[in-house]
Image: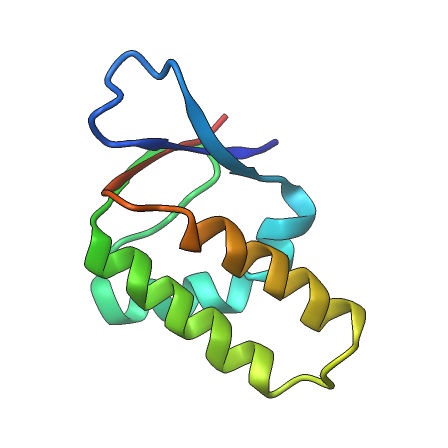
Length: 99
Protein backbone atom coordinates (compact mmCIF):
# COMPACT_ATOMS: atom_id res chain seq x y z
CA UNK A 1 0.00 0.00 0.00
CA UNK A 2 1.27 3.43 -0.84
CA UNK A 3 0.16 6.99 -0.45
CA UNK A 4 0.72 8.90 -3.71
CA UNK A 5 1.09 12.67 -3.78
CA UNK A 6 0.07 14.92 -6.66
CA UNK A 7 -0.16 18.64 -7.22
CA UNK A 8 -3.68 19.60 -6.18
CA UNK A 9 -4.22 21.21 -9.60
CA UNK A 10 -3.37 17.93 -11.36
CA UNK A 11 -7.00 16.79 -11.41
CA UNK A 12 -6.32 13.95 -13.87
CA UNK A 13 -3.47 12.64 -11.69
CA UNK A 14 -1.06 12.60 -14.63
CA UNK A 15 2.13 13.40 -12.72
CA UNK A 16 2.81 11.78 -9.37
CA UNK A 17 5.23 13.92 -7.37
CA UNK A 18 6.21 11.25 -4.85
CA UNK A 19 4.94 8.27 -2.88
CA UNK A 20 5.20 7.06 0.68
CA UNK A 21 5.27 3.27 1.00
CA UNK A 22 4.24 1.20 4.02
CA UNK A 23 7.68 1.48 5.63
CA UNK A 24 7.60 5.27 5.23
CA UNK A 25 4.13 5.50 6.73
CA UNK A 26 5.10 3.29 9.66
CA UNK A 27 8.19 5.44 10.27
CA UNK A 28 6.08 8.60 10.51
CA UNK A 29 3.00 7.17 12.22
CA UNK A 30 3.53 9.22 15.40
CA UNK A 31 4.15 12.34 13.32
CA UNK A 32 0.90 11.82 11.43
CA UNK A 33 -0.86 11.47 14.77
CA UNK A 34 0.61 14.81 15.90
CA UNK A 35 -0.43 16.34 12.57
CA UNK A 36 -4.00 15.10 13.10
CA UNK A 37 -4.00 16.46 16.65
CA UNK A 38 -2.83 19.87 15.42
CA UNK A 39 -5.11 20.16 12.39
CA UNK A 40 -7.94 17.66 12.78
CA UNK A 41 -6.97 16.21 9.39
CA UNK A 42 -6.15 12.54 8.98
CA UNK A 43 -3.60 11.64 6.36
CA UNK A 44 -4.75 8.11 5.79
CA UNK A 45 -3.36 5.46 3.49
CA UNK A 46 -6.80 4.45 2.19
CA UNK A 47 -8.44 7.82 1.53
CA UNK A 48 -7.81 11.03 -0.34
CA UNK A 49 -6.59 14.12 1.50
CA UNK A 50 -5.91 17.68 0.41
CA UNK A 51 -2.80 19.20 1.92
CA UNK A 52 -2.40 22.93 1.58
CA UNK A 53 1.04 24.52 1.68
CA UNK A 54 0.77 25.46 5.37
CA UNK A 55 -0.08 21.82 6.15
CA UNK A 56 2.94 20.62 4.18
CA UNK A 57 5.11 23.08 6.14
CA UNK A 58 3.69 21.74 9.41
CA UNK A 59 4.43 18.15 8.40
CA UNK A 60 8.01 19.13 7.54
CA UNK A 61 8.43 20.87 10.90
CA UNK A 62 7.09 17.83 12.75
CA UNK A 63 9.41 15.54 10.78
CA UNK A 64 12.42 17.77 11.44
CA UNK A 65 11.59 18.00 15.14
CA UNK A 66 11.44 14.22 15.41
CA UNK A 67 14.63 13.79 13.38
CA UNK A 68 16.61 16.08 15.70
CA UNK A 69 15.75 13.80 18.62
CA UNK A 70 17.39 10.80 16.91
CA UNK A 71 21.07 9.89 16.66
CA UNK A 72 22.38 11.80 13.63
CA UNK A 73 23.52 8.86 11.50
CA UNK A 74 20.95 6.27 12.52
CA UNK A 75 18.86 4.43 9.93
CA UNK A 76 15.71 6.06 11.28
CA UNK A 77 17.27 9.52 11.00
CA UNK A 78 18.30 8.84 7.39
CA UNK A 79 14.82 7.51 6.62
CA UNK A 80 13.17 10.65 8.02
CA UNK A 81 15.60 12.84 6.05
CA UNK A 82 14.50 11.08 2.85
CA UNK A 83 10.82 11.61 3.69
CA UNK A 84 11.50 15.28 4.53
CA UNK A 85 13.14 15.75 1.14
CA UNK A 86 10.03 14.35 -0.56
CA UNK A 87 7.76 16.85 1.17
CA UNK A 88 10.19 19.71 0.51
CA UNK A 89 9.71 19.16 -3.24
CA UNK A 90 6.14 20.34 -2.93
CA UNK A 91 5.86 23.85 -4.30
CA UNK A 92 2.08 23.93 -4.28
CA UNK A 93 -0.83 22.33 -2.48
CA UNK A 94 -0.93 18.53 -2.60
CA UNK A 95 -3.49 15.81 -3.07
CA UNK A 96 -2.66 12.56 -1.25
CA UNK A 97 -4.29 9.51 -2.83
CA UNK A 98 -4.45 6.30 -0.82
CA UNK A 99 -4.92 2.78 -2.10
